[in-house]
Image (cartoon, rainbow, N blue to C red):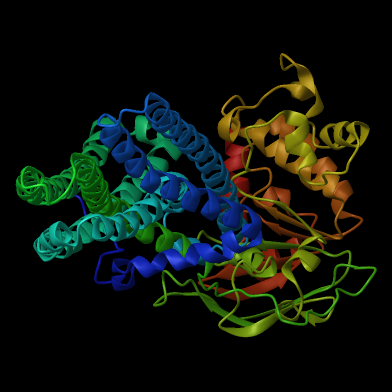
Length: 597
């Protein structure tokens, strides 16, 4: 059974309020001029629409006049009003749609800009697919509402109010009868409107859940296929999609029922009023033209009422979508830059200190990832972190990049606590080669240049040569301009790793972080890359995370970790002589290597 999305109505009761649309105002205010012009065009078209029935009345009553010229004048006046209505409507559409597109583009940029800066801790609590759903599906809904529904809503409000006034001026008696219908119409709008609002929220939540699940499964499509999980993944996605469909169907059914009730009640009332009006015409209490004018105003008012009942549901959906986006914009991040950050000392030499660090991942608060870690890495020193999986090696790199803040202790760069500096500032001085290299759906050149966007083509090629990547890149169909596919699907694991290493070489930062940087390379490529890494590391502070001890034998210092603690440190030879965990790992790995040879 598919699980219920986390964002339920109970969790987000505020989304039931149409006032959530106020969250759009900060994005609309910068375009006050366009907003005012849109409102003026809206008022103009509504006004022309209310004048048109008067022209129709003149034409109808003009049939009884003996003056052909006067009759012609009425017809030309009606034609002129129709032309003004067409012009105003087209102008209103252009202005409102342009405003909607501009506002939604700004919202998308603002949400993406906020999300791209959120720490990994934030993404432990929300699926990336749900964020993408909010940026795409929710903003598309808002665009529809801003570009159409809001203007239609305001237009129909004006037509309703204006139509009511003109009906009173035409016939107070008939208007009084029409107003008796209003309470009967409002009751179902309020009662069923609440139901529509709740079902709209459910529908949006299920759509987000569906998008999140699809993103997760498609992002791991190779693993899904390798474990023959296609049918199960398809079934799970199908259940969630059906839940989204069922919630949409329920919403549509209630809205359809609301529309049926409102339209029937309104037009039943109009027919009754028209019947009374026809009797007044027969008794000469009003002219045929006045009755026609009143009927048109009543139709305008009825149409506006029906439209408002339908648009109200759209506005409620938009209110929910707006709140979901505002939630992202106002989301709290556990990692924040200080209000007045300290500058990174220049030139940065690469001094790094870990002072009594303790840390728990937010998603695993019961398990300590690090316990009382203290480590001083001197400028230019190469320090290797070794130990079994789960020992906390990669966690140290994540804290150095300030993806998370420690629960206790501090990480210092050039003697300054990372929490006292802007993240962009100190990260500029760090180059990373992650265990799982990230390859973008761009060219090989752009992927390497990601390390330093302003680098020249010659510098990109030099970095590729140093990472032993030049040969395979040159063999691609378009060389460095070859498109590598989503997540580097066109490359082998080793080739991806060499692209990542070239990127780090190009960055030329004083601190180099290598997280299993050569784990996916064959022996020949590993030797070539290791030479490049050794040369690169000789000029900067390097922290290496490795399982294969052969790659860290030349490190200035090897730090052995187990269960989130440092259990030993020293050179390769001293640690082997000392015995313990490192000696046991070295004996296992080097014995296996010799046996394999």
